[in-house]
Image (cartoon, one colour):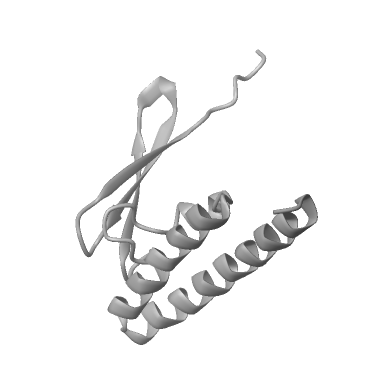
Length: 112
């Protein structure tokens, strides 16, 4: 495959990933979680086939275990856990399978 063809394939893959994510969000809101899960699986498959990274904002909104699209209140629970002087972290829990992911929040050092 020539470099220009490869770029074209990657561009199409990125467009399809964002489109599938939007469609998956709509399906979760309609209550069709099984279809949204299928869209999540397709996102990972397209990214692997085209050798494209899934954008960070999309990757964090897909459950790694059951591949369902995560929407706060419907398919995911979001909590903030205080770590004292070390800062805080956001704890995301999938309500379909119980998968837990923790994201640390860096605190800025104050000059004082």
